[in-house]
Amino acid sequence: MTAKIDLWTAALCKPDPGYGGWARVRRDADGTLAGAAGGERRVSGPRMVLAGLVDALTALGDLSPDAAVTLRFADPALAAELVASDGAYALAEPEAWATARRLLAARPLLTLAPLAETTPAAGFLKAWADFGLDTAKTRGTFRAAIPRPNLLKFPG
Image 1 (cartoon, one colour):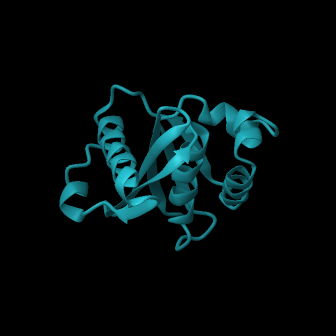
Image 2 (image 1 turned 120 degrees about the horizontal axis):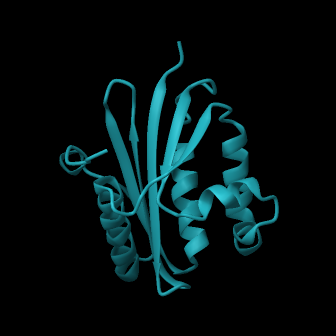
């Protein structure tokens, strides 16, 4: 039997280009939660979306490729971009795009599901993406785990 894993991602960039942040949360079949947030300076919106996606997919490295994964993403353009071979994200961020495509190809049982902006999970992720953005303003490129007490409040 394959494991059932849920992933959520969100990103933002203010202004675009400018400061950016991303966040991701993973829930395993047993309900265990893990998450991370990060940010960068002088970055584009597509770069932050792809950074969150790459971090989320990299966090699946401990699973077999046949694990069933559902990826819920806040960026409305992500699904369309993932099926385009030369979409705007590929042109804007070729290295991050290539990494994301390689990680996606290794996950044959990946289901993509848009995450409505009005859901509590989207609000949680956007708050952490905003934290990543703010931290990047003062510290530069930033990545850290979301603390367990905060993850226990995840509404997903």
